[in-house]
Image 1: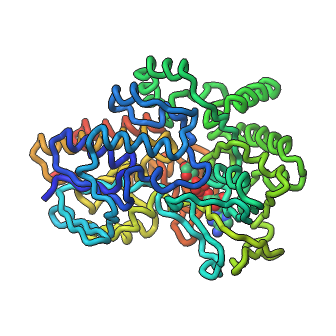
Image 2 (image 1 turned 60 degrees about the vertical axis):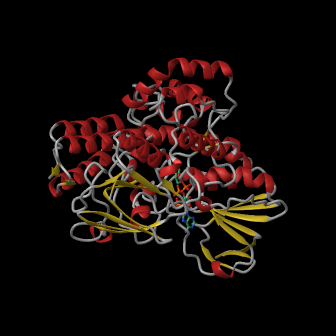
Image 3 (image 1 turned 30 degrees about the vertical axis):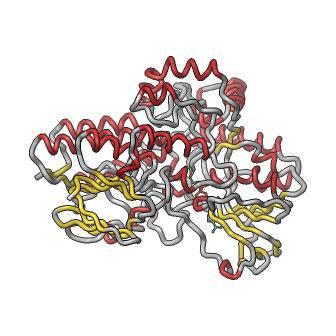
Amino acid sequence: MLDAIVIGAGFSGLYMLHRLRGLGMSAVVLEAGDGVGGTWYWNRYPGARCDSESYYYSFSFDDDLQQEWRWSERYPRQPEILAYLNHVADRFDLRRDIRFGARVTAASFDDGWTVLTERGDELSARFLISAVGCLSSANVPEIPGLDGFAGEWYHTGRWPHEDVDFTGERVGVIGTGSTGIQAIPVIAEQAAHLTVFQRTPNFSVPARNAPLDEEFQASVRAEYAEIRALQRETGNGHPFRISPRNAVDTPPEQRREVYEAAWQRGGLRFRAAFNDLLSSQDANDTAAEFIREKIRETVRDPEVAERLLPHDHPFAAKRPPIDTGYFETYNRDDVTLVDVRETPIVEITRGGLRTTEAEYPLDALVFATGFDAMTGPMLGIDVRGANGTLAEKWRDGPQSYLGLQVAGFPNLFIITGPGSPSVLTNMPTSIEQHVDWIARCLKDLRDNGFERIEATEEAERAWAEEVQAAANRTLLPQAKSSWYLGANVPGKPRVFMPYAGGLAHYAALCDEAASQDYAGFHRS
Ligand code: NA7
C-alpha cells in the first residue's frame, strides 16, 4: 500500500508530490491528461492566458526556481505556463511518479483508499489527496440539435491539441465570461465572421499586457522575498494591497481620477482602487458606472454599446474579466453581438444556430460556457467514504471543514475545494498554502503515531456557517448568475461555495486548528 495517491498533475498535484517526497512518503499521481499542467494542459483556446501577472503566478517554494525562470510578458500565455509546469516537473524529477492517461473513476475508503482508473489501474494508499482543480469539469449547455451540427464545435476547456484554424470561417462564440472575453478578440482576427451570443453582459478592465523588460525582471528577482511575503499577507494572494480609501468618502472628481489611474494601470489591480468596492453597493455603483462609461466611449454603435452594459450584478461580484481589445472588437464590421436574453437560443441547426428571432449560419461553434465549478471534478468520481458517497453527502451543496476535509471521508484531503478561498485568490498562492498545511498535517500524524484523520461534523457545520457569513459580508452573493453560487449549471444547488474571508485570515485559521491539536478534526 502506498502512503498517498494524488489525483491531478496541475500546480496542486505537482507541488503535493514534491512535498510528499520530502516527507519520505511513497506517492503516485494519477493524471487524466497525457502531460502535466492541469488547467493549462486543457485550456488551449485562442487568447488563453492568465489574469494574474506572471512574476507572481508561480511557485514560491524554491528560490532557485524563481530566480532562474524568465517570463516574457506581464500576463503569461497558456503555452508559457505549460512550459513552466513542464520545467517544474523535470527540475524536481516528478514524472517518474506520475501516471498519465489515468483518469480516476472511483475511490473508496476501507481502512485505506482504493482508487480505480478508467484504463484499469487499481491502487491503494493510506491517504488520498484530490488535486483535481476547481475549474476543470467543462459545462456544455444542453441545446437541442448540437448532435446534428455539421461544423466543428469546441469547449474552451477541452480545446484540441492540434491547431484549430478559423480562417475564412463563420464562427459563433457562446459565453462572455473571462474565457469568452479573452478568446473573442483573437477569434475575430482570424474568422471571416464572428457572432457572439451573449446572455449576461460583463464588466471588463483592460489588461494592459506588455513584454517584460529586463530591468523589471531584475527588480522582481531582487525583491522576491518581500513580494512573496506580501502575497501571503493579503486577502487575495496578489502582491498588492487594496487601497484603505473608501469610494463613498472620496469626492466625485477625485474618485474619477483614482479610477482613471487604475484603468490605465489595468488588470485585476483595478478593483484595489478603493476599499469598499465589494462591501458597499453605493461604492460599487461608482465603479460600475465608470466602467459603463468606458464601454459607451469605446463602442461606436450606441445600440451595441447598450447591449454590452452590465446591469445585473455588482462589479467584481462575478470573477472580473480583464481583456485585450474586447469592447473594441464590437467596432469591427465582421463581428455581430446577439443578446440571447432578449432573443433566446432555440436550437442548433445543421448549418448554424437559431434564436427566437433569426438563424445565424455558422461553420464552427465555440462554447465559452464555463465549468461545473468547484464540485464538478470531485463529483465526477464515484467517491465512497466510511458511510456513504460524496454525491449523497453533497446533494444539497458541498460541505467541508476549511475546504480541506469532509466528515465521513477519513484521510481524504482536497486542495482548492469548495469552502476554501482559492478561487477568489491568486491560485498558486492558495495552492502552496493548502499543500503546505496538508504536508504539515501528515507529518504531525506520523510523529504522533496517528493513522487516521477526519473532520468532525460539528466543525463542518460551523465552517458552513462561517463560509455563508463571510460571503454575506460582501456583495458577492448578489451576482445571481455566478459560478461561485453554482448558478451556471442547471439543477445545481445554489450555495455560495468559496470562503470570502480572505486568504491570510483563512491561513491563520488553518494554522490555529493545527496548533490546537487539530481542533475540529478527529485523529486516531
Ligand atoms: P464563466 O465565467 O462561467 O462564463 C461562462 C459564460 O457562458 C457566461 O457568460 C455565461 O452566461 C455563458 N453561458 C453559460 N451557459 C450558457 C447558455 N446555456 N447559454 C448562453 N450563455 C451561457 O466561465 P469562463 O470559462 O469564462 O470563466 C471561468 C473561470 O475561469 C473564470 O471565472 C476565471 O476564474 C477562470 P451567464 O453569465 O451564466 O448568463
